[in-house]
Image (cartoon, rainbow, N blue to C red; front, side):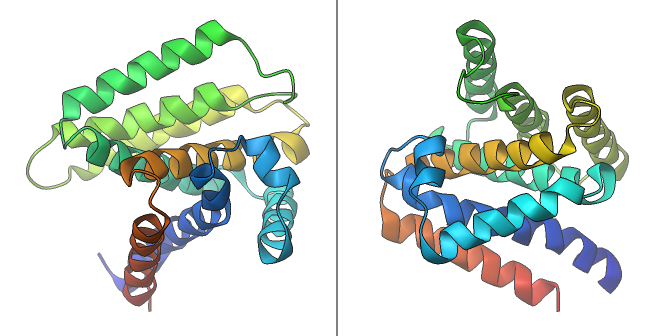
Length: 206
């Protein structure tokens, strides 16, 4: 992978980790997403507002979906820790979660919830845990296309201002909560994981 390709891959991953970092405080305190956003202060509040403004006009294919995919992979990495690296257990957990989302109905506090898309994208990338050996680039591209299809089917025409931020917040919250569980709600360990990973990505993208 050449330098430009590395930088292109690193950007969405760093954006995903930045969002997780902004939401992790609420996840660690076992709050809900709405409460976490409502109680955000200082840099966290400002960062979330900037993210929402940016997402409003972001290109779905080129800018938004790569971050959604990175958030899905982050959630899967957390689940792999929780499930002791068992790919079948991770996939089963996500299947159960998808069924729960379908059965519990929409969240009345959210106009167009993205929970089903968030879990669906994570399930796509959980398939990577079942593979061994080198990454199959065609298979990877196909998985990312499926993620794009899920998102495009969910986003409402003319509603990017509401749906794009909701999509990122849903994915970021899911990843943050999964990481909180993976590290047994230990703030120090979770923060070290996020910051070490972000630092490694930043170095790779230079």
